[in-house]
Length: 565
Image (cartoon, rainbow, N blue to C red; front, side, top):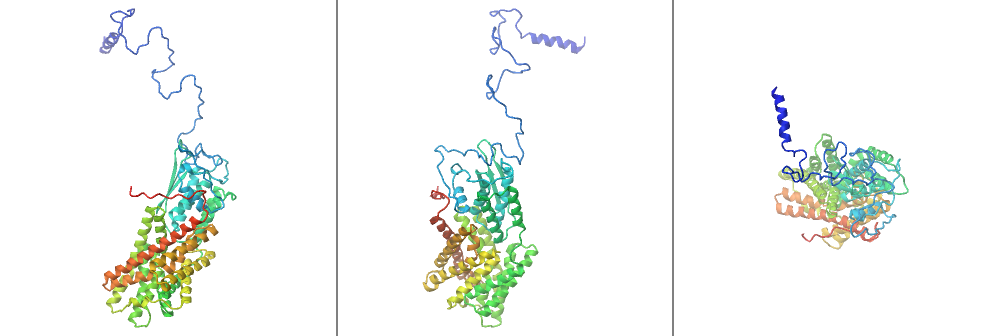
């Protein structure tokens, strides 16, 4: 017998040693059994092939007839809409314990007001979409494609300088127009994200997009607003493919003004600004030449791939150099007005207004990023001007800041210069030709209010600037509501005459002449004027929404003050 054969019967004997003998009674000596053993007389039917009697607590009880769902891929395709999604019959809203309040939205107001009202509501209190766009299929387009279109539209708006709240309102409007009513857009300075959850039992679909390049083109901005307005209109049926086609045409659109027109507009802006601070015809021409030369140098640096910080530094040097040259040549002109006019063409008023607006509406991350960008641009301008002023002072140039303090005594010429400045600023912003006249008039009104308060009423320049900027924001919001468009083309160029160019130059000149204390005081005044402009524009816009009918039957909600908690 082999060793393996010898082990087999021994193992069988060892196993049988733990089993009770056959025929042993219940009360026998060997009657010990497991407490989980099946009692005698209880017949149980075991399923064929079953390995264990233990079942899951989630198992379906016997006798309960449940129709199994058809076999589908649990993960699903990225381009497959959720099972509960329907463009005609949206899922029921998230019901809070207290119920859903009745909120009616007025359809004859701009979509910006309606979407902004709903964005400030909790998700559970938002009403269902009033109307949805008809697609090729009754079930509606795929969710990821709608989210992709939404992100692309938001990218163009954010890259064009639009405020974060207005970008979120536009993204929300696009989603609701295709039936996605429970969306949460999120906008930061360089990142756009949106999330959609059909119901509480479905997984959310999230998409994001990065904004890597920004440029100023208000004509493109107006076209995007028109597209969003058509999507939000229940009488205009725009399919998803048609929306993609129109968006591609907007991206391929050429700028309305050529490069030479932009350079000429930069010169006119600097010349008009020099007149506002007391310059004459010679100063006008010198400031215009310096600004055009700086603009061309900045374009050259941009073509070489230099960052915008260095572009602003290079663009600030020609006007300062021309002012120093006129002083060294003993030409009887106000050289300080030449340098001040050149600074007007470089101050980032658009980014400043957008940054302060984002901060006032609660988008603090985006506001911080925008204001940090403004600070970098301002530092670049300071570096360029200080470099030229330092060498000019070392060469013996005698620059008297008091020369540029006196404004002209002719109010008609001052108003004309302010309107010319706003006109040139509008061309630089690539605005539509139909909006140039309105923003030019708005800029003239702003200077009239500022001049009447500051020069006639002897009111502080900060308060006068804030009041004039408030009227600019109010009129710009009214014009945008009338045109169902963005308010930026009607407000940004109009604040050009109010920019603190002279205060900035005086501060830089004092620092270059080793008068640091006076320079810091003047720069602080420039910062105060800039904040007054931004806050005034935003306050004027909010006042217009407060007293005009907005898209809700109840007052628009805002974030409550935290009181430090």
